[in-house]
Amino acid sequence: MIVSMIQLIFEIPEVDSIKEKRRIIRSIKSKLQRRFNMSIAEVDLQDSLSFGQIGGAYVSNSRDFGESVLRKAFDLIEKEVPVRIQDMSIYSEEF
Image 1 (cartoon, rainbow, N blue to C red):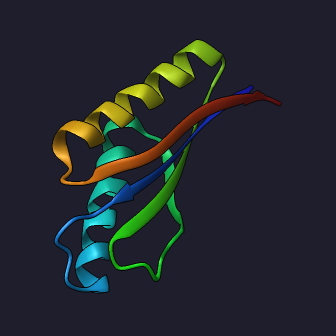
Image 2 (cartoon, one colour; image 1 turned 45 degrees about the vertical axis):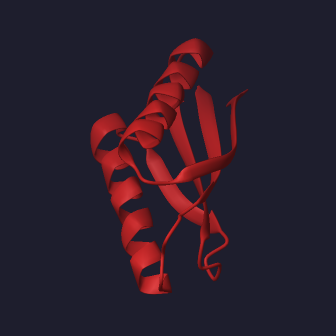
């Protein structure tokens, strides 16, 4: 079993409240869960007004396939969500 993981740190420009920031993060999580059937959570920076950090995981039987799914998820965020990516990492582990 291969677990591929992604971690993203991003800036959310022009956000005026934590409530608005959480709405955007919920939207990102929902899109990724629906489109890619992956587990995703806000893992840090919950109290920061303009930054967010999410982590996601995808279980498969192939490292290449799992990482390609996560790269597609990253591309979706870049194209469809109004955030500025600060850092992104993808890696896999075999269990």
